[in-house]
Amino acid sequence: MKPNSLKPGDTIGIIAPASPIEPEQRDKAIQLFSSFGYRIKAGESVYRRHGYLAGSDELRAEDVNRMFADPEVKAVFCIRGGYGTSRILPLIDYAMIRCNPKIFVGYSDITALHLAIHQKTGLVTFHGPMVGELAREEDPLSWSVLFRNLADPRPAGEYREQPDTDSFVMTEGTAEGPLTGGNLSLLVSTLGTPYEVETEGKILFIEEVGEEPYRVDRMLVQLRSAGKLQAANGIIFTECTDCQPKDPEKSLTIRQILNELIQPLGIPAYYGLKAGHTCPNLTLPIGVYARMNATERWLRMMEGGVC
Image (cartoon, rainbow, N blue to C red; front, side, top):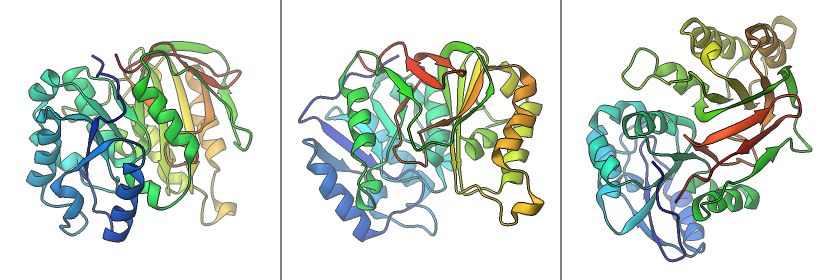
């Protein structure tokens, strides 16, 4: 199920399903976002703080439900990630979302909502940049690619290796299938829950930030033990940002870990797609049919994410 495409002047709802954002950063980001030519409707969670959460679980879940139910809102953007999205999954009205399919954008901790919404409703959602980032850095490519995905029903095209990427191949080959994935920590956190990531016959993309290599190792072993890695048709790792070991002499590198854990699976796999906690953060429409070439290190969307 695909949402309707985004048009100039449409209303975009902004929510904070996870952690709060600092007021100065929030105000600057919303002001810059308004210059894109869309009407803005901010949820209550954008202005709330409850410790490390953007308001209570009930309030944050109600913001999600309210934005999808609001006939004026054509797309729902998250302002930041952080932590807390998993806490609200049981409070989301998935039946209502199924009846009101809309564009939904975010990444990082928002992975939990992507997986839950897509699996409970079949709606294509968009793993892409969040509003709060506008206050921190200029990243025009990420936003132009995002809005191309949201405004044009045609396939977004091909994402090839970027010049400054330290990419490498674990296993050569090509693969096809629906796209799924997200932040590694969140993918692992869904195991054993009603929102468990489904990878069979799919292209699985994985991104992570700020984790020691041994933690990345541990999470990948858990996914492998759960049968999630070997069930995929292909695997793509985005850049693992800030995942260098504190003591390199006593650690494996990310490259060594991936070669030891992924290569034996015999599944086409490569590292270095620019998506997630990296710049640019290329948009990945979860649920669309895609093709990957691990040998040449590219991913191609075979259909658009909107109608």
